[in-house]
Image (cartoon, rainbow, N blue to C red; front, side, top):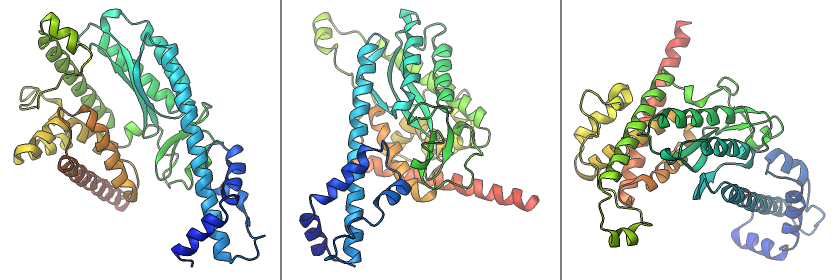
Length: 372
């Protein structure tokens, strides 16, 4: 073992050789793959006979980190350029500040989506506002007027079409691929499967992440209906509140209005699809138990919490990161900025629900094995 002082000296003394090795690897690789790196690095630096074996190992590790940083930087630049061009070329149907959190292999799906949106009636006001990779599939975000006749069904059909096509398209290169599971889910081809490392035992058993849990089709239908109802209500609220005088409207036209905090259930009791699932009933019951800000958070993010719980499919050691990433995405939907204590509560609550769901599935699987 070498101490921090020795490590700092090695980084300084061999500052030129570490990036040189990293540069050679990064120049020939579009993604960092552990097995390929191990084969490439081999016994590099052992020609430095004045150094120990621990020194050689540390220099190889530093070269690997540098190669990884270079590849990530190159990928980020390529994505920024490609998605920037996509937005410019389709400015009539893609919002200028649209955000795309996915790899370049799916850009053809976005072109297809833009062409479809271009055919929609102007009254729908449909525009692509972003897309992201989630659980190995492409989730397209479209802003539109769901209250317009025919809009909701067509837009949801497009979103589902893009999602299903992404499950057969490599996110890295665009070739034919399939959903693969390791420490995370990703749709890749055989060539790029190496980027995922060691696969899980159930890799290849699932074709659609939306159908991992029991009654997935029913739950997805309920969630879609709930989102549609919420979108319609938000649209009506925006229309009802647009009563500024002309001089104020000119000043406020480019500003995002502050949304009021939620205070009541949006849907009448007995007609709420949220509580048609066991998980929804649990969250609704917890809502009645909490008070103050915590109650507001459950009301405001109930759908997001249910969606994130049903979609959790990562190993338990990755759950904390999954929960943090999910809650971080909710910030843009919040009626007011989320405080540290708000996010801490949401983290703990969501993690608790996921742990219970994992335990429920584990017990069910054990019972099925015992039955067999």
